[in-house]
Image (cartoon, rainbow over all chains, first blue to last red; front, top):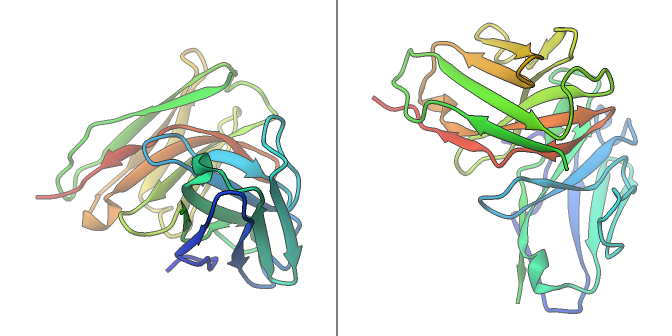
Length: 111
Length: 118
């Protein structure tokens, strides 16, 4: 069982918006602004899309946004595109070992 | 562009040692700005942080694996390594190497599947 809880799957139609939640505790997500999100197309290298809760790396579409409230972080993808279909993982720094924890991953299907 | 590539043995038998290499291009592992990380994903499960190593050789390990793992690096080859001893079926996973910076991992390898089976 993963330390952070994500829904197993979400889906949306092209052009719509979806939100993926990531629930932790007051020792990780709730304690720090150190949540990151990764997009993973099977067989490829995972790609950083959000860091420090809401910051986007250079080159990442502004359709991806992140937020946090209490022990739950969220990733929102607006204007869904077929290429967004992938697995998404959240991660957080934690004050207790093992220092970084991850979610179980969410499979996004673009209908 | 920074790229990381894992390489390893393929199939292992229980009790053997898993040895993986991560070859880094487009960045120097001698840079003090980053830490070099291993992460794994067992089939059907989430990601698990294994540990990381700084250019100085300082290491931090997941306590659940600490007794069995050793991370090391070779700056002359721009590579870092994972050794995991006494593997069992539970160590079957896709193993990723990644570059860490402050509080996140900005570049990852594609991962390599390491099955453990008798």
